[in-house]
Structure formats: C-alpha cells, structure tokens
Length: 638
Image (cartoon, rainbow, N blue to C red; front, side):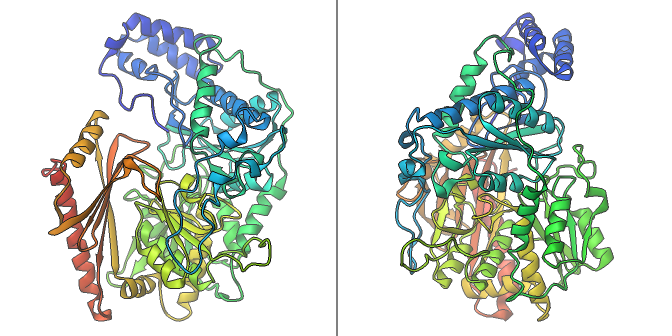
C-alpha cells in the first residue's frame, strides 16, 4: 500500500506541461465519474496546477500486501473509479486463476507462518500453517469462487464497492455485497461465515477524510484453513498486482471499457449476517466466570461506522450503561470534530474524556472509523485526569484477562483424533512489547513474534490471541481472523467490570504485571522526510554505524532484519538490544514517508513501594534512548 511516488514532483520537468495536459484530457475522456473527469479537465487547463497534475500521473497507484490506499482524486496515482475497476478486475482474474489451478495451489499458497512458537509446555506442529497447506486447502481441480464486498461511510466507498461487485459478478464469481456501511471486522467475519474465497473492504480506516482504500482478504478454497479470512501476503499481492497492471495497459489510457460489469446478479445478505456477527461477539462474554456488568462506559466511534454495532454488542452482553459521544456517533466522511480520525492522535479522544467526566464513567472505549481498532481511556486517581492507555498496555491487559479465562475468548475448535487440545498460542509483532511473551510463558502458553501487521499475526498456527501496539487486537480468531476493535472492547469492559467489584482498576493490573515481570515502558518516534531517499540513507547509516549504547548500556545484539532469520521472514528493519534489556527497532513506514523507531525499556520493580520510582526511571530512560537514536541518525537538534 504505497503511492508510486511518495512525494509530488518538484515541477513538471519529467513531462512537458502540454504532454501532461494531453494525458489528463485523454484520461478524463474515459473517466466514468463526472466529478473526477471535471476536476482533471480543470487541472489540465490550469498552468499553475502542474505539480498536482504531475503527481496525479506519477505512475499507477501500486497494489501491495495491504491493497490500495491513497487520496481520492483523478488520475492513475489516486483512488477513483478507474483505479478501483482495474483493481477489481485484477483481483477477479487472480481468483479465477486460483480456482482453475493456474498456477497450481502448491505454487500460490501464502508465505508460511512467520515463526514458530517459543518453547512452552506444548507447541503447534512446525509447518502447520500456510506453508505446508496448499494441496490440503482444497484439491478440487476447479470451482466457482465466492467473494464478499464491504464498505465504510467514506466518500465514494459505496460506489467503489458496488462496481467491484458488478465486476466480480460479470467475471463469474458468486458475489455478496454487504447491505450498508459496516465495520471492517464484519467483512472479515463474512469471509469466513459465507465461506468466500475473497473479501474486499473499501475503507481507509483511520486515514484523513480525503483518503480511501481497498483491502483484500483471501479465504475458502483459495488458502489453508489457518489463513482463511486473513489479509493477503506474498505471493498473492504480486500476482494480483501483475493482473492489475495487465488490465491497466489495455485497451487505452484510463479506458475501462474492456472490463465487463454486470447490471445485477450479486446477492445482498439479509440481517442474519450482521446479527450473526453481533451474536457471536456478544457470546464471547463469560457471564459465568465474570458476571459483573455494573460499568459505566463512554464510547466513541470517531464519526465512523462502528457505533451501532459496538453498542448492540455491549448491550447484548449485559453492558447497558453505555454513553455514546453524540457529536461523533453517526458516520460522517468529513470527520468534523477531529483533526485526524485516529484514536492514537493527540486530542482525538478529548470529547470522549469530557463526556466521561460529565457522566462519571468508569472507562472510555474509542473505535477508529472502521472499528477494527480500539483505544482505552482510564481515570488516573493520581491526578484526577483521563488518560489513554498505550496500545502495549491494553495488549498486556487483554493477555492477562485471557489467561484468567483459560487462554481463549471462545471454545477451541473441535480437536481431531484422541490427543489433548493444543495450548492457546499468544502472538504479537516484533515492534510490540515483550511483556505479552512473559505473560504467556508464565501461563505455560506458547508465544510467537511476527512481522508487523495482522496479515502476519492472524496466520500464526493455533492462534488464540494476537495484538499489535497500534491499537489492534485479535481476541477471537475463529470468528474474525484480523484485528477487531469491537470484540476487544467487549473483553476490556468485562475485565474492568470484574475489577470494579473488588475496588480495583486496569491500572492496578498493570502494576501487578510490573511487579511480576518488570515495568515495560514503550514509545515510538516517527521521523518524516520530504524525499523518500532520505529514509534509505538513514537506514544505511544505521547499518554502517549502529549506536554503541542505549541510555549508557552497551548494545549487546544488533540484528539486520533484512537478512531474515529462522523465525522471521526478511523485512527492511534493524533491531538493537542493550545489556540492560533496552530494545529499539527501526523500520520504514509502509504507508507514509516516515522512519519509525520503536523503543522499549524494562525496569525491575522490587515491591509496590517502588512502582512510582520505577515509572519515573522508565520515562527518563525512554527520553535518553530517544536522544541516543536521534544522535545516531544525525538529528540531535530535532
């Protein structure tokens, strides 16, 4: 998921202005959307719009492992109906290739599991994931593929979804189009519930209002059982991209007349599909072991599509004292009350915190606009203020709660044979905290670390729970094999309600975890650049001259993740581990021109009386490590 070029051209020097204008007029002549065609004609006629025009035509928007995501607008480097039609045609061709066995399933299965579990009492069988599955996925020589298409409430999402359904149907794919703007987890659920070979979600998640995106899942007979309903990875991404490129090169520039589109023929699922998701998620609540429901909740859906579904789930599970932020409850593609519709951004939860203060809430739950992530806010008695918990803190809390529930949010799938049920497997990405691994090992569960992204976390064999520090949590992989902010919110509420009955809070559990495993504190530093070449230069510099110490502790291990390892595929990243356990991972962003540094320090805590001092020590250590990394990057003054 990236632009063909991350930054606009400095000028129209690569193409003479008239050549650019001619290309724009040709594209506009084929554009099926009068709005983008008109905008393109206006750009072509405006000599001052050369840079915008050059960027819009800076190559085809590139399809990757997260599909497509970019600003909406005219031209091949933007999200629009031409680009989406081509993407749909490419995905359809790939599904038909898989169904026909060309190439064979053994050649097209996804990359194998990202790693094997770390030692514990019991481990899943090595190779039990997608890597060894292909022929077992479904050996039939041909079949009619099924696909389901969902969409959020952003501008153009419904149109992009409807045209995708029309193209799939014309290609001979049995297609379901979700009936309304719905959360991404509902689409991911539908891929499995409807036994589809593919799922398309039209969403830009928490991106700004001007963006949209196209996310692709595979399932059914196209992949192995462990990866059904998971976002695509290699080689599918490259194969779909090649199909899209072939479509884009014919019959003419911006011309989609060669792509067949049905007028009808797809199915629209009735209310039973959404009801099935809500019932399944609501039933995750364990009313026997955790019966308390006396919790006052403030919820915000951040102007997205999660409000009704999230509130229905919470209330069905017995949490009836729920207060939605009224200004943010209904979908609004302009996201008028937030600078960025992302709960991670500073200030995004201010309205929710104000309402929590007003109604005397016990907890704040914030979904992002497509509801696949959740942020948690708590009242800190130390200062009387509401604070958002870090994603790693919520990840650890959910891990601890699932351990208390026996390791799973739902009953394990029926076991084959007479052997014992496998242990629950916990997983998180390499940039997330190491605390979850300690929680898992203390419980006797295997733990897996993966590359960044739920396309990796969700395909871990035997997965019972996985998370990523960017507010993504998969608590019920048999229902939704992706991050799901609604099911995660329900389990956070269940945990908080149980704690309230004994006059304890989520902050108290974090203290317990610090006493048991050391205080784990983490932060992230993002360095934005104007020229993407700057990222390569910074990575090269760190490879040649890695920092010698982090907060005064010598670097004991340096790992170049681009070389791969027995437990992780190769990726562009660097990892540093100091003698005192401080860890830094550096990687380029996959979606923005940024270099990201993920920092974690661990401070031992000898007793409750030392917790406050450990917090101060951890924050000072993080600040020192930030300084060290900026110095290593030559950014001391930033």
